[in-house]
Amino acid sequence: MIPRRLSKAVLAALQDTPAVYVAGPRQAGKSTLVLRLAKNDWPADYVTFDEAGMLGAAEANPQSFLQAWDGPLVLDEVQMAPGLFRTFKLLIDEARYENPASANGRYLLTGSSSILALPKLADALVGRIGVFTLYPLSALEISAGEGDFLSRLSENRFIPGPLRSKHRLTDMIVKATFPEISHKGQSERRKWFEDYVSTILQRDVRQIAEIAKLGVLPNLLKLLAGRAGGLVNEADIARSLGLNAVTAKNYRILLQMIFLTLDVTPWFRNVGKRLVKAPKCYLVDTSLLCHLLNIDPGHAAVHEPHVFGQVMENFVASELAKQLTVFDPYARLHHFRTSYGKEVDFVLEDPGGKISAIEVKGRDAVTAADFNGLRELHSLAGRDFVCGVVLYRGNQTIPFDKNLWAVPVSALWQ
Image (cartoon, rainbow, N blue to C red; front, side, top):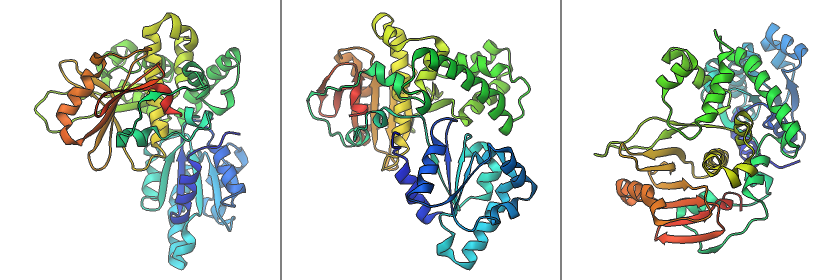
């Protein structure tokens, strides 16, 4: 069983917060994570609302249901029991009044929907809850590595020289996925993904939204997979699906809420340059992207370099999102593009406004021209620009300027 890096952060939050909500896509490993905590570091009873009996009891009498357990309680897939949400607030406030210290760590909740998709839960527990996202396995977890890529990036702390990995990039793209299929063969993975997408779009969506045209969602997901890494054009997406622009946008946001897709917002400040302000969209899981587009990463790496470049960029986006969930200090993920074509795939900005940036190239070598977007970003950010790297498929870390580097993509997990 692969240890999850989020465990320590969740455990720390339970020490000083009444409730903790671990969100993430289905089958990402949320149940395994909370069960392990409940059996070892944070003893607690466990209830899953995938069991019809438990769900029925919770909905019938929420307060009696929660009061039946004296100690800490894990509630798995809590979005299925919205009737509990107000009761959480009442019981937490009651515990705080009687003994503030004992109120912490009462509830560990999991859900397959973003808390933004559950406004009643968010409203009831505002000021009482810590929120975390557990994505599918990361390359760092697969390799059991202690890599500190984000720290090195944010501190401009790279060292010239070779960086070789026993894990190939194409293997990592395949294995950094849902735990259940991380080591399965191609045919098993294909069947698993077919069932997974069908279940998610038919069942989970209905739990958080009323969808008039449910059959459109698989087509939308495949359309977004084909455009992964591109700027979102809401009007064009709507035309392709035969929907109005508002409906198409709402459906696209819904896919984000259930953790199938990931938007990377644009970076900009009040500067004179004209910057593109549309988000870029990626799939949370790159193996799912490959499944939807019928891409074999190993074949594409050799025979379809343009296709593989898109796959590699999506992989980097996913890995950055996963690592940022446990990165300290906190940083936001953006992209950068000017109206005249200069761009950087990923920009990380910390709370102090410091900028570090990443360009992705699916090639074995890097040229000076590959840094043009990073230099443009540097000119706009000025002293706030700390470091820029081009991640590529080679194995040498190469300095191109005092704060510009070509870095092997394996640095993400080494």
